[in-house]
Image (cartoon, rainbow, N blue to C red; front, top):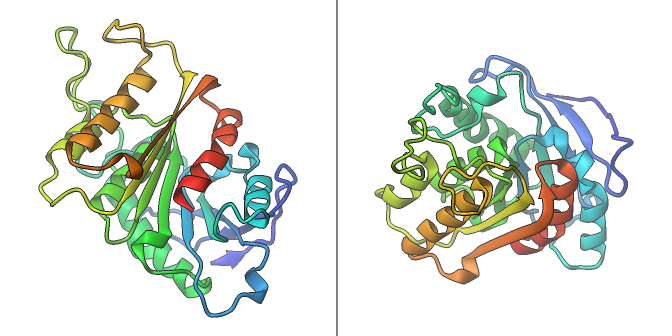
Length: 276
């Protein structure tokens, strides 16, 4: 991996270091990611840092993440952490999704390869190069929209790696069949995974979700609530039914929030304080 030493002028506060990943054997492409190091990283002692990993890392500068991180860390409202934003590739709709299966349009068919890239390629490299904790409670995976679905899917399947997941405006509508007007809320893949995964639950994982009231306009079940909110609330209820206590769940609904980095930036302090 090559350090490009590129700083983003859009992001005040902690400035990211951009890194070019060598060719991925799983994704068959190069992967770019930004690394945000805490202000005291150079003077750090022996304690390893928590890792916060983001899908759609190319959107992080537009959320104002650098300023938010620095403000919260200096105010001691969050633990110092290393944040890594993985840029999406040209095959984003194929690499992101749910590893169990693609959706009904065969989007997400490369999600298993993306999962393997994260677990078997990226994480080992990050832990070799930076001083990072290996404890699940110190590792968080988050993302925006379809990237949020991908992060949740990988974190859910690997609680031995990730102790928390963050989903900003998540594509939780992801489904294995087109909408059935007789039962418009059926066939959602992530909901089915949460309800029917065979491994024992609950565990110590924490889950943070955000949706905006203007995330979209679709309302497939005609209940007066947009799908982005319905799908999120239904998934949180599925987590409750699996036994997760309220202390491990967090939902933030932003009035007037839209499907864009500006809204996700407004939600970022709440997310960071929940997971860090």
